[in-house]
Length: 571
Image (cartoon, rainbow, N blue to C red; front, side, top):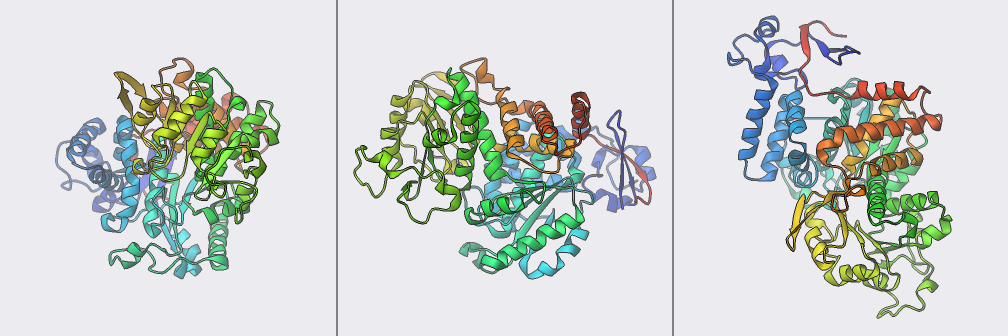
């Protein structure tokens, strides 16, 4: 076994390793490649196994970037970086750290979507744990085999709703791997303490089932009590093995996401990033946007396209933020209009899920509307009659924010707030260039995937990526550093407000609504402290002075640099 020792003052690490020679070069967290010194090569049995020149990590990083830049496609770049992560994890994060704005879209959205679709074809080396239904009696043994011995954060998916791409089965493992890479990159959670997990409950994706290279369980998805019992077995096994872990649910289907969150949020230190993390980043972006427009959130009327777990999660947090500004809850809900595939959520609809019911508008509110079809009230109908000032897309349906709808939005407000958030970019409800063109540059825009800066009518606009990576790494850091035992709505709201305070648009009307990704570490630190303070306020974390909390956060923030290695038996 390996033993990690960290100097509390300097943050420098020393690892005692029983591995030597070629075996040591195969340990991603300890492999330094050509950066091993001559002394280390002698002591650790590496003489002759590496070229003679000793290189700094900076030189290694430059070489990696040179190769990275030569690839022709983003998927090839993704595969190359993932291969680097499996060979030399410290160097992987060093390269990401130096090129965060360029490489974050490559290791996560939007490229991770392609990687999940191609997972079985681009698979190289194992990472994390695959827990399959046929082997459900072996969950405890699988956890014993975990390569991460003392995890702080676990991200789990069952692969049924990957981004806007649907059921990818075991290929969904690309999402937990990518998410945890962002925990490390953006917030400094140590890579030796993050564990990706895929719960393989089968797949209903016919292409995957017919693919001879598909690596998952080739069986239709289990449902009902079999599925619930499988998840329960997994949760109980994790809790027995790692009782203090932060547990993140990721990319579960609509029918399961809210159910699992409600079932386990008071039993585990857990949250669902699709529901709560997405809600937090959207509310933070809205708070930034309304400040930039000189108004308050409670003054807004909000329309949604998409009323699934993500949409209703965002809507609930918007309602909470409005009530914090003095509105009554009923009044706040009345300002939220949600449109799904069956039209406006309303009181006459049948088959609405429990989490949708509270956002179903009384049908009588539309009695004076001019409608072509009263059986199906469309997004256009809502924008034309309810006159929203905010339009949010979480539908996964590209092009649904048409020129007509966007121009109607522009007639409702001087500075309409329009957020086409569906991932990847191919699923976005509109492009930011079109939104700005159709509103003569008046719209405040943020998107789910990166678009960078765009030029419309000779003017340059910075487009914020309304991506959960601004929220969940800092949230996780705050929970881990403060030793919180639960994740509450108040802690997530604290994260949203902390991020909103850093909005460049608050100081410059032409700036982006969210900070530059190059500043993500300092953003995550501020969020972590705010989350830790809220956890203490709710008595869900040990009490300590603010400065001590900040020190705890700083101590948890790992920097990608090579550790000292020495031979040992470990422990």
